[in-house]
Image 1 (tube, rainbow, N blue to C red):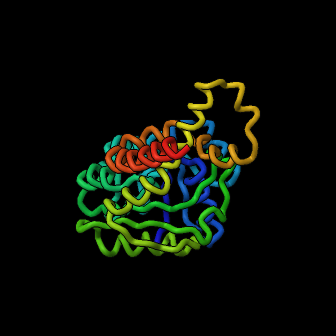
Image 2 (image 1 turned 90 degrees about the horizontal axis):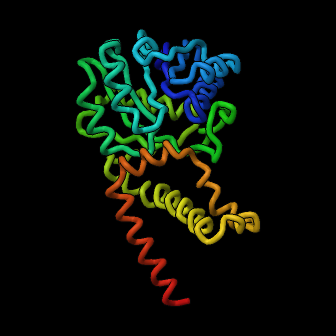
Image 3 (image 1 turned 135 degrees about the vertical axis):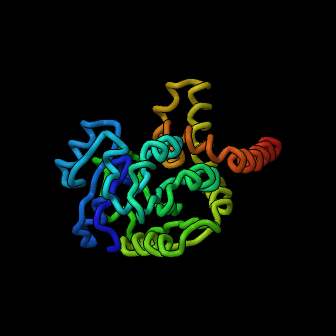
Amino acid sequence: MDFRHVTIIGVGLIGGSLALALREKGFRGTITGVGRSKKNLIRAKELGIIDDYSTSHSKGVRSADLIVLASSVGQFEKIVLDIRDDLRKGAIVTDVGSVKAGIMKKIEPLMPDGVSFVGAHPIAGKECSGIEGATADLFHNARCIITPNTHTRKAALSKVRSLWRQLGMRIITMTPEEHDLVFATVSHMPHVAAYALVNSIIDIDRKLLRFGGGGLRDFTRIALSPEELWRDICSSNQKDILKTLKTFSGSVSKMIKLI
């Protein structure tokens, strides 16, 4: 591993799984967890997921050579503003968010001299959230999208690629803009559609949900995802999500006519 002290901001399913995966692959350094809930952080330490913790963003990143933003994407800018004066020279900041173009435009200019930002999106997860669902094998044989741009330092890019590859992920490189259109189509739109379907059934009669079988559960499983997470994704990737939803709406209209 190229790092000695990793700070994970947002110790939930993805952040917790990252910490466990690092340990499984032989990481011997320090893993610090940072978050809003002290209770959650204490639980993460009890489970052996992190070595220490802080509820202060700035205190948690001091001496870290890798900082991973694993909170909701809507919190990234505020977090970076909190930590930028405490980042050590040579540190790398990366993320696990599923929106890239707008986030990188906000975050990169906030990086102090000598600190690099590398956008990353490991394509892994579950319908559940929180550290209780964290597993060391969550990323194994899954894809990780890395989204460099013209400002990304090659040395930092190489280290972030190497990190996810050592955790068993298959690396794909895209521009931030390509990434956002792809995932608006294959991830963000389906999530919105699942929410819309559940809401439509409730609008007809909430009691009907109890009659749903396996097909309905499979289709709407992703509607169990955290609301805060998807609020921020929809806000950050609004243009591409609306583009894909308009196409989806046209397909539904065709189905109505055919039926």
